[in-house]
Image (tube, rainbow, N blue to C red):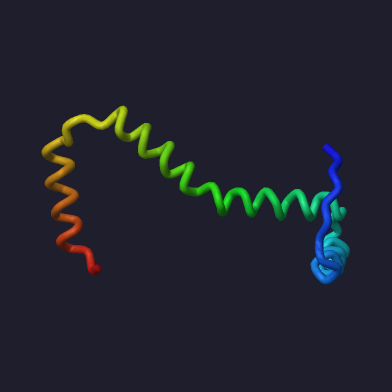
Amino acid sequence: MKTAISIPDDVFAQAERLAKRTGKSRSRLFSDAVREYLARHTQGEVTEAMDRVCTRIRTQSDPFVASAARRTLKRSEW
């Protein structure tokens, strides 16, 4: 999809230099940058989704697993 955006001149110049240095098109550079930004800022959504799944599949813990986990934690340095 094509779109028009406004960015400060200094940011554009830095992006232009980086695109040339990495051999990427400007479009690819900006697309990669937005993708990375979204990944960093939507982590809470991923965590919430994982929490929902864990809540749905959560059953009583296995006594052996619980005991092994406690022993492992006692030996671990915090």
